[in-house]
Length: 356
Length: 191
Image (tube, rainbow over all chains, first blue to last red; front, side):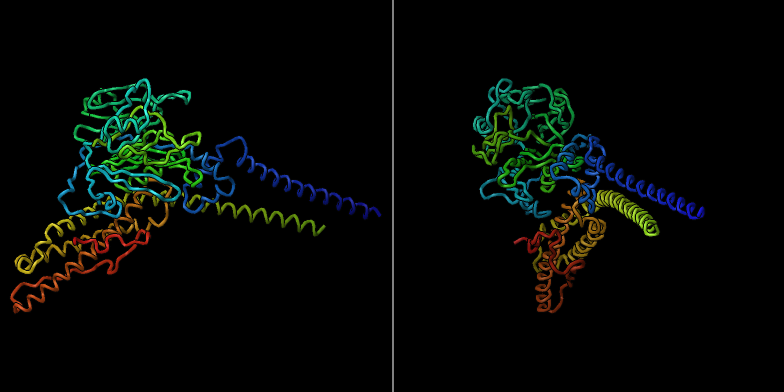
């Protein structure tokens, strides 16, 4: 009888222990899952950012980010990333102008052929439409870099002007927006350009710089596009004839800037300028905000890829968004959409033009 | 009781197996990242060599077309040694290009997140296709001329020096290396 009682109590003890172990395991599992969920979706964004940026920089594990997060979240995290410029300035000696006029065209590849095959009767420029992977844009190859100049709004400093107006007033064959402008409450008239503006060898404006990286984007008297962190005095001493100041630099001396994620600028209408090693200048304007047609816009990676594909040796981002515009023979070529959904650009302080 | 113990053991085993699985997975993830970094480094190191080889090829091609007006019988006969030497150099340049492309051919099979690697791979594919297709077009054109010359030489009693034909050393058919459905460089010789 006593023996039976002892056996029974031992059995009961063992059951209690096993139950405790089981409960412990369940608690451990619950805590693990909760902990993991907390890391993924909790207030601490470090793990989430690490997972997304890390997964998206692999070849075969991008789904890890896509399993747990929406496209928008991934994009938002990548927007926190950045463009890291090389810190170099343009090496002028690497630009060697080629007069293709009398030479048989030795195309390096199909993009080279596209640039170098001029439109009939037009020795000044060629427009190439870019339509791919949900982006839409316009590349203009300018064959004579001496024709590329800065043009300013008539009342720059006080009031901006529409790109079509700047183009017409300066007899431009082609015009593209250039500087960003001081716009503290998003309601400025586009009159005050950020940073340096040099026109025809004279400093015409030197207000606060935009916090966009980059620096001077200008042409020397020898028609070389120079990218460099120069002051206005340094630029003029270097013989810069026309320049604005913006960024980031996308390509310097043939090397693209390091871009983490999508460069931290997101997708939007964009403008950029570049120059090939043979001297041909490239204007690039990308449409955006055309959600009805799946055209969100371009990011820094898109700009860099397109420009390098067409041979850009030096290239820089210009002001984007509603400012982005391309005018050819007095007509707006791109399809701008402003922040309110209207099909319009806006008043800007200055532009890059191709003089007739 | 026995069933209960078995259940506990099973749960523990499952946790262990899951843990090992997760550990292996994380390891492969890290290896993928490291491999990607390595490939990006390889591409950045290999590309300048390829770029140089492409420029050398382009220069020779340019020389060919700058002198193609000399590709008639009498001048070929007179400059036979020069043309034989030139065509050997031209063949060597495409072999050199092929050698400079080994790493890029191996690594540029995916789209990289790194913009430097991505743009280099895009340029590599476009230029590689163009160069190889140009070479085929040029050798075909040159060999046609040599065939005509040899026929003429035979008619002349074989008294002129022989000109060797070019060889298609890498590809003998046009390639679409960048997968865009076009054979850029095919018959892009001077017309």
